[in-house]
Amino acid sequence: MSNDSTKSFFHWLDVIKAIAGDESLPATAVAEILGTSTRNAYYVLKALGEYGFIVNHQYGGYNIDADSPFFQNIREAVNFNADQVNYLYRLLLRQNTEDPMVGGILAKFQRYYHLYLRPKDKKSFEPYKNFQLLKRAIEQHKSVILHDYASSNSLSVKDRYVEPFMFLGDGADIRAYEPSSEKNKTYKISRIKTVEVLNKPWIYADKHKDAFTDMFLYSGEVRHHIRLLFDVSAYNFMKEEYPHAEKYLYQYDDQTHWFFDTDIANYEGIGRFILGLYDHIEVLEDAGLKAYLKEKIRRMRTY
Image (tube, rainbow, N blue to C red; front, side, top):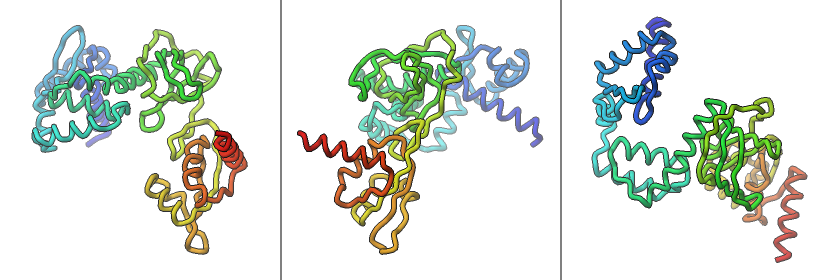
């Protein structure tokens, strides 16, 4: 396949992805994705109809029906029967439905398998809807209002006017610049009641700063290097609770202890782990972590 043919193939896939399901785009936007004229875009849309896609045209936009024969063939290849689909759906409903990832999968199951969504389950889709709105805001460089954001730091529930610019933690968190505090902050999507995308472009893009996410899923602009010494009990607990931590563990010379060496963004995650296994862990670095633990212990003793 030539480079031009390969490029065209991926452009067609981009069009299918952009207008599949509930999404709808005008022919001019389809042409932009294809990198061609509007006239050629009409040709592509017609060709997709001949290749097993049901292309709908309504309200000035085009979209591909989720029940298109092409998608049905793919579903049959996956080979989920009705009992399997309902079983998986029930499993998903028992998960943390405030997780945008769970909400997104539930939405796809409901859409593609025509599952009935009970009213009490509709709240499962709110984080997913908020995720989609934030995704659009990032792509369009728009400001948003996070309505009724419940902050565990300030212990408050209030609206936040921010400029979102990236997702963190597999899409569970959003990184945004807050003009009122002049700071980049990380917001949990599950704590947002609703997202309002404003018709206001970013004006502080030069202040947007990337964030480092540590293995405990805490994010920040500053990295703290820590070094701990685990006995067998702490080593086993760390591997069982955080399987991806194994790459930060290496054995000490006595064969019964292990070093844990990594960077973190916040002392809270590792602090909880240490306090739960205090007699099994020695903190070697850093000074900030030692001070954090000392203060935590002092406060616990006052209760």
